[in-house]
Length: 135
Length: 443
Image (tube, rainbow over all chains, first blue to last red; front, side, top):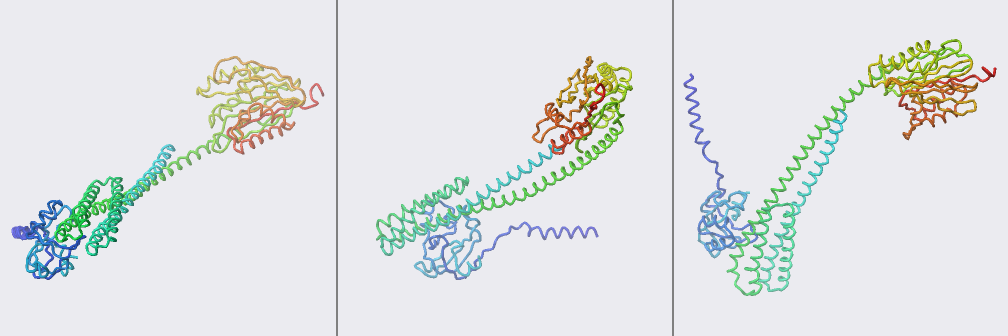
């Protein structure tokens, strides 16, 4: 009887251990294939679309001069440009100025002069259904 | 105990004022930070005004927008200086640093973006768009940092105010509890003391009444007396007087005041009265009576702080010659039939202090003359102003008093009561002996 109880405890511990050790990750709020509109919340509503998610992240943690350099690898698209979400990295963009990490969103531009190109934008630059979910 | 109560009260009051000052200071800081938060939003509006005015000018070439741009820029500079001062006063280093960065960025934006465009409005703005966006993004991030710092500080101050209020409430309750508890203890202590004092006073008064003489009538003389006890909060004193017939002609006249109070003093008055009577039956010389009593007193009473002032007189009721000795007792007067009042001199030190001889004086009384003896309750009676009556004042009262000795004693006692506002600080004994007019040689 005692042995059975001991085995039960060990089994429960083994079952629970991986679940407890696994870090709690906040899920990405975007859905692949979702159609969205790009619009920046900063004073200038145009949106930078970066060629890599690394540059997107670095841009938001950089000084003004560094930003100038990094921005050479980005397109500036007009507010209201339509796009489709192709991928998402939850909490990838971290900055000393952000109160919490933001998502890096991979988009396929559907309108504007860069139509047909893909790039990376900040989670907070994405409007539409995505933004509604975020709120 | 009372001192501790006062300290508790002082600390409680002082603590309340300190808490009030601290909370007031925190409120003031919070208010300054809230104002800075509003100013910061206004600053952002001015920054956007600058950008929009620039865009307006590039699209229309209307100089009106240039004016708008300049006004917004001037407003921005003035506003940022105001916020800067507020942050400096509140010593918000991080926010101040970010604000300076924001100001520097705006200057940089004007130099790199705004000025070239204002100078050459025809320039293709596509090239400048990216730079403008970068400035905008960066400024936004910096302002977010200032905003967050101010919000954090404001929240911290609000929490601090709340904590101070809670602490103050608990602290006040604690001090009030301590004060109340002490007051209750003190009151109980005081009540007990008063009860004990009242019991002692009652005992003493019973003793004094028992020891006070029922005067035997003296030939050719009329005797009056009065006795007043001090207030209920003061222990009964050791005042004593006596008129005692030593023989058919001679009478002993005594008044004394024991320095202490309470039952001990009352018992001592009995000792004085009967000892003096005993000595006077053997010795007729008042100075000798005092000297013998002084020796007996020193041997009987062990308390070195007790002493007695005493007036002893031996009155011949036929010749009206008074031989007296006064051991430091200066409240002895004679009122002549002419209404002139004289003070009888002291002939030696108070009893119980030193071995000194006591002189004897002779005073020849005439019919109509009144001997007035009192204790220091008369001469040391205080007016409401605090001023003492002294000997001169006592003599004036005696001069104005009635001739009949009992009336005289009652009037003097009443005057003393009125002077002190019906509150007596000390007991008062008065003895008045008047040689009846038409008696003795006149008869």
